[in-house]
Image (cartoon, rainbow, N blue to C red; front, side, top):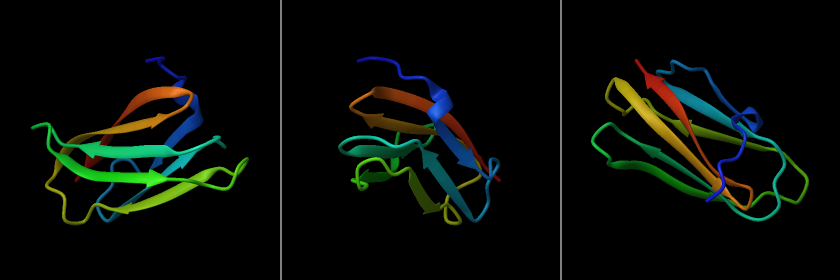
Length: 88
């Protein structure tokens, strides 16, 4: 898989405690957003299909998540990238 530039992904607020917004630049086709904890357990698995040419703003409730560091995986036709999310 191609490693896409991380600059087209923004995660805020980070650290988060209630909810987090994942902002992605416009994509063509589906985007899969996954949040994985340090044990490798899948906490969130969402498929987003935005109208073509519009940026994605996905809000995820993390208030039930344990405090710690999570990996956010974003995969679409331009590749797969990983970002770190801190929940406190």
